[in-house]
Length: 149
Image (cartoon, rainbow, N blue to C red):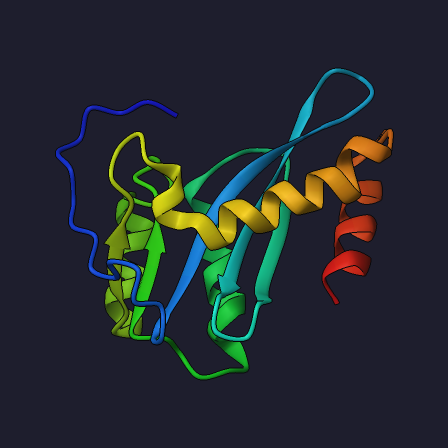
């Protein structure tokens, strides 16, 4: 999603020892609609910390995903994401402030600044999404849940 916001700082700078990363990806349905997968990934143990599938790509989707991510595990010092409107929303930024997590951002036009989550979503699409014709959001959710556990 394009935005005209001023570039914010990359605090991680490829030092992922105390950072998680987050992003959203699109998943097509057979009716030519889309659903959206929001994921939080821990590059230190190569695991998805939390994920949610939604009908809309909203600040609420990424906020709920982050809330689930910190629910049963130690919080990171940093969360790294792109500067999509969901991640720079007041709702999401307030949650990170409340959790005392510093927000790090990819440089505009540089998705490889967030390489771990980009790679995870790419692999997921190659292994699951491009091989399956999903009719409903429930089918997507079950498939993604099975894949990431």
